[in-house]
Length: 328
Image 1 (cartoon, rainbow, N blue to C red):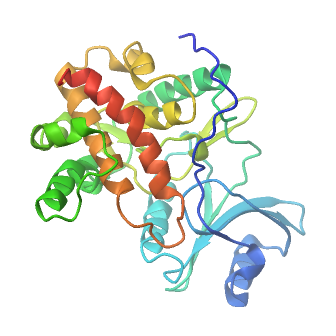
Image 2 (image 1 turned 90 degrees about the horizontal axis):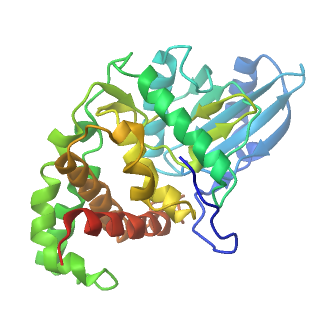
């Protein structure tokens, strides 16, 4: 697949949460982490990308080793500790051959939860997307899907684990009926077809069924590139579904970050071969409804840019959905 170079001068919403510095962690948390690391921390480089609030840092240790740590408490975001705990369970269960940083240890005092990972000497992709890096990542997604089919660990179905994602149009329609949302700023096409979109969204759970372990949140900020490998990080939403869904879910973010349009990649990608049009259209409806409804909600604590990030993914997703349905 040949991918053309995007323009370099277009801005887009960054994927970032509000980060605490390592030194801002409570003393007992830092001590607990250093005990698990077996060495004092001499350097802490905060990592800006990604939508987990709290601490996310690469640590240099007095013994010459390094590690990566992410830590949060309910005071920063009430939902993040539960996600960290699930991520710890998933990361501990993933086979060693999955290209992801290995979980080394956890710290959990009932308030603060911290995950310690091996430190991968890699970087996130350049943005806007560079064609060569995007081609490399797309190939890695294909390889990852093959590795994880059938799923090597037990997880919930994607439609059960990510129920909010599969109900965006229904929630938006309910808000319109309750006069909580007047659809201001939304493409008029949505208002004309909202009831049809609700029906289409209901096909999502069956369309998503499959036997693959899905990451479900592959984006540039959840990737690390090394000279030899692509690593997939942050697995709290891992779930079971159709092999092509990780690719489909990824593509609106690629388009937002000045890569190709979603259909320019999906329609010619090997993972899309043999997949029925109706299943793909249902899942494009699902992801579009999720982005549009979520983008109209208040920002959660510690994540000031997430609603704009979802809105900006919703634009190419909606363009894709309009093309696929052919509705006027």
